[in-house]
Length: 327
Image 1 (cartoon, one colour):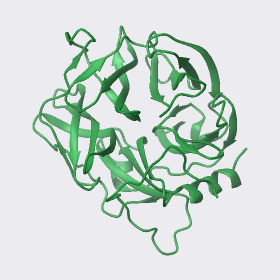
Image 2 (cartoon, one colour):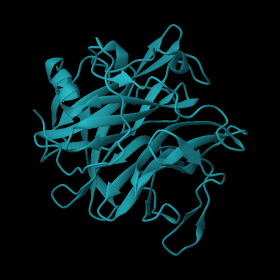
Image 3 (cartoon, one colour):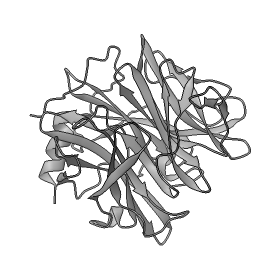
Image 4 (cartoon, helix red, strand yellow):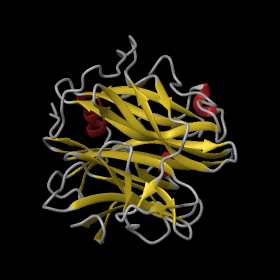
């Protein structure tokens, strides 16, 4: 059995028991999607978002595609981790001097609890898509740092603690479209500003479901024997792209080293809200909450670039599946 490390008990944890007779590694919430179309004025769709426990409930950073189709980031609140209220105005970022920072768009955030603050990582604009980082204590003031990488780069997520006294980030260098760039790299930094020592962690194309590209998803979950990392994988079919959810387990003391890689997807688009929408056949995970004492995991994912949905598993269940089906 794998034990959660660097985790805590989460009260009022969003949960639904596994359906009787279901033998897959992850099961969907029966009342999906949890956020439907037009959840707030001027926002047509909310998806690919990242809730976290906060205070007596939950808070998060949500991707909201506006009615002009430009994506921005919004704060959302919930008492139970299932029913969310999205703020009407997008997040306003400032730099370390307190000056407003303007960008053309922001999307696909990850929220990392880190010591007594939170780090936000998302895809931003810098003469093309690349990664941005901000810091917040209260989800009211967001201080944006300089972009860590040149364009093009996406799917950045920072580990929830330093390893060997370094911040670590997974990312996927790319270009402006769906291309042959599709591998996950690990980078390190002493100060969240200067990043280097880039190393390949996992490459695309091991199986058909991730033949085009892969990318890191939610914050890595620290176990006693490694880091559990949910990913997305993309395949190109005669009917377009298909985004599925998979997983890796990385070495605990050196996460650039891959211990296990599940050759099967954990989930692929099957339900109507996943196969039909603005971009059909897409499921895209951005947040995984884990209740340390029970090992329960609540996985939030975007569905068809239209909805926010929720799925469940446990550490033991998903780790056993990954190891059983690993290359």
